[in-house]
Length: 337
Ligand code: ATP
Ligand code: FE
Image (tube, rainbow, N blue to C red):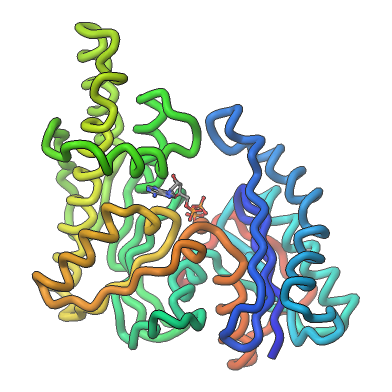
């Protein structure tokens, strides 16, 4: 089975080609234009997708050394995401499936972040069902019980900001360019995580809240810079380490709760923030100290990529889950619906 997969939910245009569960190519065109604006500008994102989608597709086929006539199906991200961005990928996928007269498969982006673990890689076996998935991305923070490929149950989620937003907004307060998450990670590596203390939110059950943290960081920085205008420059590494430490503590304490309440200790992370070195090492520690088995995706499968859309496409193909040409993009698309 050859699947061509298309991802265009936010600001990355990506196309991948898979042969069964093996990835032959995974081309990602990241849009640089948004950096100037300190965040993703939806209108500009749609336009860039429009410009990128054909060349990225051509490149993905070329790298896979596959002719489009060999393709078995087209998989695409239907949602959740920015409507204008999703429309580009959805329309393109429909046209391509129609032109090639092959089946069309719609994919939920958040399911894809979880099922990215099933892309065949040399260094890792996928988690056995059931497992707990922690999806940490730019728009979501969820703890999900994964019973089977398409049987997922949300155990908890954020009530306000996503963890990626918490990273990016904190970075913005520090004057770092967008997206600031990876930069906080970079500076945190050299800082002292206990240098500054930020309050942890009190949220019930397995839910999260990150908007209060952002506000307390803002007040803290305002207060410090009023006394010392160079406070940020002089303490950047310690501030970043302390912010990252706080966020990771929040995530880990909820994960521990989830393990306790479900009795499942296979933990898989997904989404852009799983690229963070702090969460990666906290999970490695949990393997040694708590006996968990943790699944951490390769970097290229953490942030948005079409490879993860392709693997969902493959499993949907195998279970005959196809869609018709009447399908439309869905900006709000629940993981379990
Ligand atoms: P969603 O998947 O919820 O629709 P999205 O697709 O925009 O959102 P992703 O591409 O999965 O999000 O992740 C992007 C987020 O990951 C950004 O907020 C970015 O700052 C964050 N991120 C990426 N690398 C790191 C890192 N090393 N440390 C912290 N955050 C990171
Ligand atoms: Fe994503």
